[in-house]
Image (tube, rainbow, N blue to C red; front, side, top):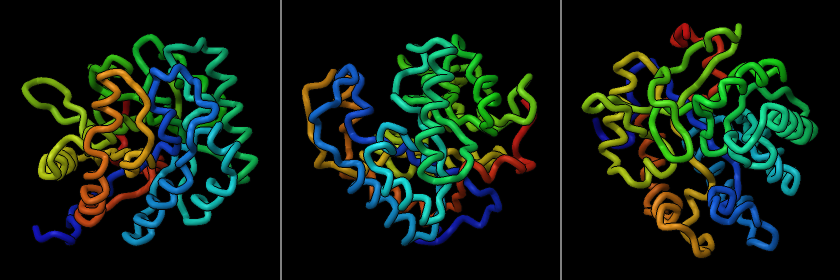
Length: 285
């Protein structure tokens, strides 16, 4: 297929942006964020301009501490026709919270973001996809709070997140009526789920591999779930002392992402996550 041509398949993939600042993804800072340079407005505006240029709508999972400081930025995202979900309030890992604290964090995020947009929030994504087998209670809590879907499960193994045996494709959560899970995308290679299509994975992999992965997932009858952060497009962000792992996952190949992202939007159709809620492609859990 020539560059710049759209796939002819009818499956529309899911595009999501975790709207947070550069330092929120560096956990070795131990949540000591005061005084750090804020760059989220400029990087998010860059993403919005690319999406406008390509005619693509996405879901922005907004971190509420960012929304408090940048309400006009959230209004700008909404005004350009994108779905607004929540990324929680504090960016604390779910594994660090009790069910009660999680419920409070989510409700606080809804109160903050809802007061800015004036619209209901249907979707949630946990910081760093930090839903594990030890946190099965989040789905019931989210349903009770009025959410329609979650996008926090990654069917792979990672030190911070992952449920290797989880369902790989969007599906209805068993035991939580009417609630949908939109998991991070993986492909099966040699019997293992390999994460693809998001953040570090997009930056690290050759574009040809990402294209193959999306086509493979579509061929299995499912949309690919692509996610990025505004800071993925910001190679000039500050570089404090971090762990070796963070130096790799947070900073590797930042300058290469925009070109890959543009090609992805040129070659495949994308929609917000909420488009799956009444989609027949969503499977039973």
